[in-house]
Image (cartoon, rainbow, N blue to C red):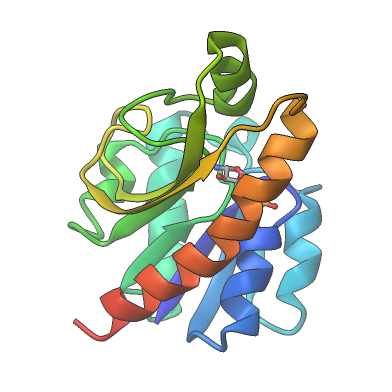
Length: 178
Ligand code: GRF
């Protein structure tokens, strides 16, 4: 079963749900994440850092809750905190993330703006395995698009997200079949 971690609007969570993948539970670092409302009747919960003595304690609690819902594969769908070993060691080689650039170029939270500022002609989306670094784990799949003259962060991100919504469910489906 799949656990999905979210922090934002959750369009990638929606794509996983629309693809009818076996999502068992949704968790967030923010109680007010709009994405949580997409979970509907699925078990969903927030694990705010402020409620725990440390990030490792929060991550351990979140991992425990996901395991309790039979989660074996974790998908980060716009989850904006780094995960510690307290979480990753519970799901070895089984945490994936989707990122709006052609990694290893432009990791981090401002990838779309940074690609435009750097004047790149090509961008895209990457699905990769998660380690403790910032968007640094092994790449599983990537798809490219051209950056167009006049692109804004919003227009470029919208086209990248259209890729993400196809690429992420495809890779997750493949991982489920392992
Ligand atoms: C996506 O563009 C993803 O690449 C990045 O955060 C964004 C999340 O969007 N990591 P959403 O919350 O799935 O709509």
